[in-house]
Amino acid sequence: MTALEAVAVHFPPRLVPIEDVGARIGLTPRQLRLFRRFHGLDQVRLDPDGTLLDLLDAAVRALPELRGNEHRVRYLLHARSMPVAVPYPLNPLHQLQERFGLTHANAFTVTHQACAASLLAVDLAGRLLEDDGDPSALALVVAGEKTFTRDAQLVPETAIFAEASAACLVAPGGTRDRVLSYAVRQRPEFDGRLAEDPELLARYQKEYHSTMIEAMEAALDQAGLDLSGIALLLPHNVNQASWRMICRRLGYPLDRVVLDNVPSVGHSFAADAFINLRTAVTGGMLRPGDHYLIAAAGVGATFSAMAIRH
Amino acid sequence: MPPAAEARGLRVTRAIAAGFDGRSEASLHPDLRTFVGDLVRPYGLPLREDLLSEGSGHDYGQMAEGLLGRALAAGEPADLLIFAFSSPDVRPGAPAALHLSRHCPGQPTAFAVCDQGSAAAFTALRIARAHHRTGGCRRAVIVLAEQSALHYEAPEPVGLPEEHRAVVLVCEEGAGEGMRVHQEAQPDGSLALKSVLADYRELGRGAGLLLAAELAGGTPPVDLGAQDAPGAVETARPGQPFTGVWTLLADRLARRPEAGGPLLVADHDRRLGRLSTLSLP
Image (cartoon, rainbow over all chains, first blue to last red; front, side, top):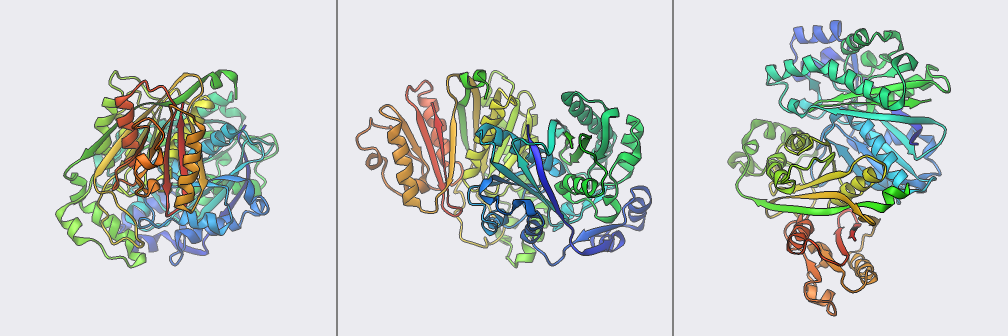
């Protein structure tokens, strides 16, 4: 059974108020009020002088569990929201692989599931490791992106992106955080320009909560759990309002949703899942044996959830 | 692995390849200029104003959508779609995999793999195999695409495709052992070729070998498999660094769908030093 062996995060030191981001990318005062008052956004972590390689490098350096185990890493996956992140044929992932001596790793990016790509990467890593049949092998999943263009800066009326990054070691078994289930719901009819198509945006927003809930319930069903047995919900950090709505519909207590990073870090693409797991673990929010649920959604649109035993 | 999974392996059963003329509307959409302009600005790379103003390049989703219906002509549902690419789409921020899922029987779960040069196609097949062996799929569709327009000056020398081209590989389970994918670091092209030829010899008489143009390095097929039956060894035509050898596979499967012997498909990404092979039983 796939297990998350260790998780590390990197927060770029610069905290930027959303009003400063708004001034740079042309948000109106009304849009900024919506983000601050309704969605609960405040500041985002950015690294204006750093590259994508810098972000991923810092996350991997923060993972001491990798030291001495580099030779065990068979897969290096970048879970990425943006399908294209650097000019072709530059390849920061392979630079990362060389830099950390992951010479036995097959390094590639998984994408086209936007910010739900990290759960996909964990699932793929687990399947590949299981298929290989080597119980000592590991996969390293990294996440984090640059906010280099408008589509990587803003989800209209929903989120402002940040540049925190994360790294997660995945094993084919073990007693650490064990993956019990993974469920995906895709709605490709929402592939389009949300910023320029108000009708599409309205339909997406209308369907968002019910499809997210459907994916979460499917993950719970697969794991043989129900929501009352979930100690903690780790959401993606798009905003607080959508999780208030989802919790109200599910009857799940909002104080068991890790929303701490929404105002203080921002929506860091596919890295949110790992960032919130790290917050939960270091904050003592999970006890051994607790079940928790990670949920993520990505424009395009993909909704996924993963049930895990701590 | 459970014995039942061993007894019915996944393999490529059908393949469709096609080239595409002209350009897609997305090549003239202002979004493309905005995206590539923002992408290259930190690197100081000049935009290719000629390509941006005349409209050049193709949309991967548009290219491949029609091939899915041809590859699954009886509407056989797939439960996994993996899109693999190397050079970027003219809709570089768009999830073509999800678009393709809408056009694929079964509307399968879809995602993409990239950033691995020509090895990405093999990784997609490896993932499909792992999905099958872990109970995740019975029929998978692998979509590969490349288009020829790069709308900025490349920061490093790289071979771009001469033609817009897409390939759809259908993977289905069948009795016996399934396909195997092997990938390894091998920076040296000639050593990569030697290794592939050794693997091919081990498959014995009746086996076939399909080589990517870059891997064959200009050596004529007849010199690579001189003692074999005519046509046993084929090399892809140059100019299609990502889809070339898969076009060859589509041609081979179309000509000899029930070919008796095993088949080895091989490619080598020289920039990343990655050798990949696919063994089909």
